[in-house]
Amino acid sequence: MNQNAAGSNPNETGDGAKSFTIGDLAREFGVTLRTLRFYEDRGLLSPRRDGTARIYDARDRERLSVILKGKQLGFTLTEIRAMLAEERSGNGPAMNLKLSLDQVEDQIRHLEQQKIEIEEALKELKARRASLAAAA
Image 1 (cartoon, one colour):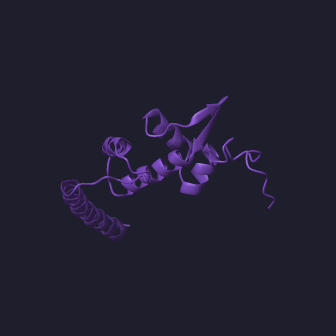
Image 2 (cartoon, helix red, strand yellow):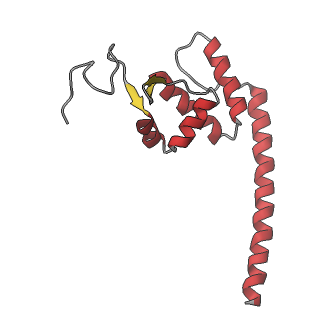
Image 3 (cartoon, helix red, strand yellow):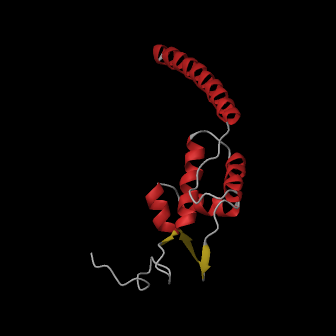
C-alpha cells in the first residue's frame, strides 16, 4: 500500500495528525454508525465536521475506547460522561476511566447482583423449556 506524504493522506490533518471517518471507527471498534452518532448526541464524542462528514481525531478515538471499556464494565453513559469530565479536568494526556475504590466496590456489588438475577432467570427459563419439550 502506498503511503502519501503527510497532509496529502485523507486520513491525516494538515499537521500530520491521524484522523478517522465514522466508518473507520465503527469498523475498528465493532460498533454501528448509529452508536457513534448517539454518543455524539450525548456529548461524549465531538468530531469536527467537513460538510456533512464527521471527522474524528485521536482524542475522539481514545474517548471512544474509554466509553466502550466503561460500557463493558457495566457503567451507564451518565456515569461514563462524569468520569470523562473528571479526566478532562486533569492534567494527564492519557484518557482513562477515573475510578475510585468506592466506585469499583459499588460496581462489583451491582454486577454480582445482576449475575444472581440472570442466573435465576436462566434457571427458570431452562425449567420451562424442559417442561415444554416434555409436553411436545
